[in-house]
Image 1 (cartoon, rainbow, N blue to C red):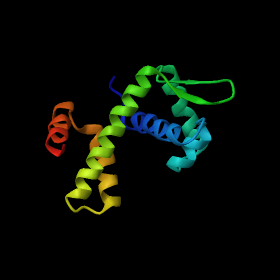
Image 2 (tube, rainbow, N blue to C red):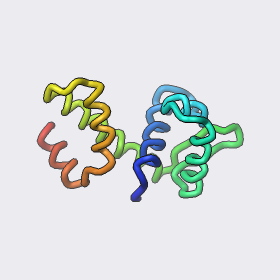
Image 3 (spheres, rainbow, N blue to C red):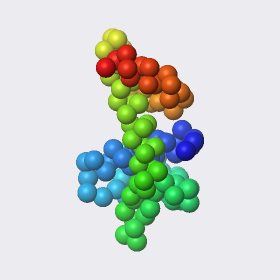
Length: 119
């Protein structure tokens, strides 16, 4: 289930967007991340080839079971780490940026320990 940081960010973005809109398209992901649509299209092709997403004939993007598992794991890490850093007194924007970097490299063991400590 190991992916690079970029792929994890795309999956997380698809998950977050799917919570607030009925369908997600490449243009939505590009707008959200501030990337060119062509760059997002290349990434979506790789995610599709690795069976992390499916794309309907209309261009709607859906997470597969494995894609959703990865996205939810990254999103959980992001939410917990950013709220924890904010609670420690870090500015919310800096906390979100730092959480975004940490969420991809922290081990499962360390994250679970932080999660247990925080809750």
